[in-house]
Image 1 (cartoon, rainbow, N blue to C red):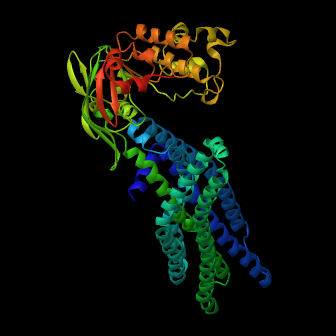
Image 2 (tube, rainbow, N blue to C red; image 1 turned 60 degrees about the vertical axis):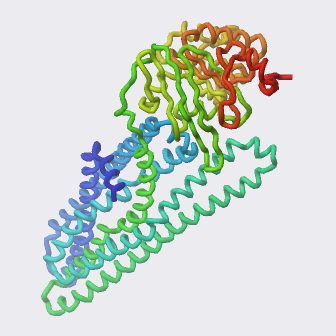
Length: 577
């Protein structure tokens, strides 16, 4: 019920349009019920008048029928126009809300979520709410308004028929939907989970198509996708089967109710308590009255699915951090140091990535992190960037004004102070200028060209016919790995962050380019605190200190030259043959 109320709150900005659609839909239903009842009376009356060879005023009922037909047609057209427009408005509201939520999630929540699952929530779950207004909310509103009106007119003719009809309407409109809603309350959540798993399997199959082909595992992956698809289809089949059964049951109740009303009215016609033409009118009135609840079973079948989709969406919203309440620390232009105190981190109970790590990095100091694979280098950077949560210990930023726990900063504030050039850098499907301006949106073309030249991309840029307007393709498929690395370095050069983290910045670069890039980074970023993950002896020789990590612990902290003299294991670690 909480998620239902939260969905209603999303409807609030467009409440006027939604209520207008509900009014027109209710008017259509009532006009249709009245049209069928009066048409039945008119046809029966005309037949009776013909048999008795008497004249009757057919202008008035014909005019009423024509009026109701026009009302029904006009309201139906207006209802379709308004309700579908309202649906699109509500859908846009939900999509904007979901995207805004995803954009505000902190790095921990994003990193801990499977990317395919996030895409599923943006697409599948939002699409599941596409029909929330049309197929769920609208039928409920129409039933709540139209049933009392229909019962009021019906009870004026015959209370017994009204009671029979009301009981049947409650069975079709309340009992059956309540049963279906309870039945599919749990399976709806499973359906959404299976849908997300299927999307994840398909996403993995597409992204890993090359590896699957190389290891001849494509058939195995297809089998997993087929199993996920079968499980998902089973849930869909159950829902559609229940809908078909409810439609059949509704039809049966409708016919039995009409038959029951005829049985009640026939003795009254025989005793002349009511006119014979009213038998046809009341029978068709009873039949048409079920249109008020005709869509309720389907609504309550789709309601659990909609609420399950809403729960997955609101789950992301509930993860939003309290960044808005965190103070902004204006230390962007100040030199910053970093202090890691008693840092422990475990990926699971048996795998300790970091253990009692204590490191102090002074402002403007150039530090290198070295160590074998799995020693904790990337984990330490992930903790600094907020990609992983700090489990034990604390990370402080050091400035002339004092120290501050980095977790006290908002996500935006943290990234104003921090620039990371990751080893796997994503190139967006856009122009070179657009990719560079992700780092500095206000940068001029001259600043972009200067950053490219500093990153040793000047000669390549000069050869491009379109220059900065050159499209780089999806994931940067039109550039080499070395060029992609230098584009990332150019982005880092455009920013004015106090702390810069470089993860293997010279990887995939030739010897001449590597030396030029190292010189540029050291000169341009001389007033920055630099942390680099590298095993390149040339880059290590330019660092002030080397922090050697091994098995999640700090083994040694010294200059590169001192470690070469005193640590044979260090020589084998950083020397390339």
